[in-house]
Image (cartoon, rainbow, N blue to C red; front, side, top):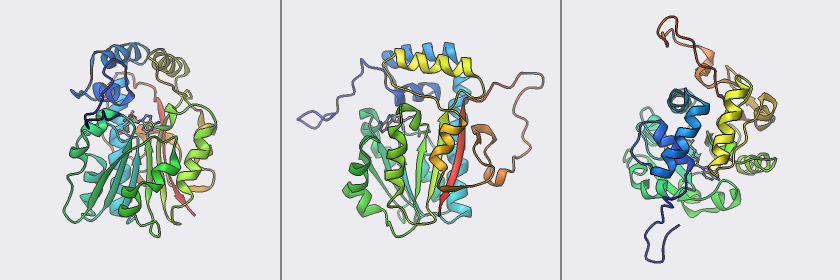
Length: 275
Ligand SMILES: C[S@@+](CC[C@H](N)C(=O)[O-])C[C@H]1O[C@@H](n2cnc3c(N)ncnc32)[C@H](O)[C@@H]1O
């Protein structure tokens, strides 16, 4: 929250999901309270750093595919996180220099770093809006959203590793509200924590977040599918994050030292197209 004098209160004494995630990605933008929470989460999910990296890699794969192969030129990314190269606009502008991106997050530290998100290709445009996904109308009405995105053309709405921070039924209404004004041919891009692959590990993770004061709900396949009910889900469908590749074609890359057990997936990834 900005102080009266324009400074940002970083709320360093409370753990924040953006800073915990930054810690898992090896970043420097986290405080003692975030690290203490992160260590408890890591006890529940020892592979969490690989999970965080895998989630970020999905974002890059999906955005490159949308921009380069499907011609999407506009992105509304909610729950952006602390900048980590490549950021979403960089992945999009590799193939589409004039891509326009609006970033939205509710963490004051992300706001403090927003300048790093605003340096893109001169042909394109990036903007940052401090807002909460639980106020979707406010996001849609924000001047930077209205002035940057053309709602007559397709927009990719990306909610990557975000919706599990909003427990309960309301998140479905929120996502529907965000999708409603988007043109036909727009996309929903999502990753979401699930208990389907390793219930004990992910239930422990949810408890560790909650114990640190961060609300969270993992959802099963049906709960994630519900976000995509009225959309055409692209291949390969709603799958474990590390298994999502454009068209479902997974490159032959050896991922693990031979003999090492592959850690269970912690989340689903999917991309759906609005009819
Ligand atoms: C795990 S990070 C994911 C960052 C990025 N989307 C990615 O996948 O690499 C979750 C992000 O969502 C943000 N966030 C959590 N709850 C939010 C809310 N209610 N409204 C907006 N942003 C939120 C956090 O501040 C954090 O930056």
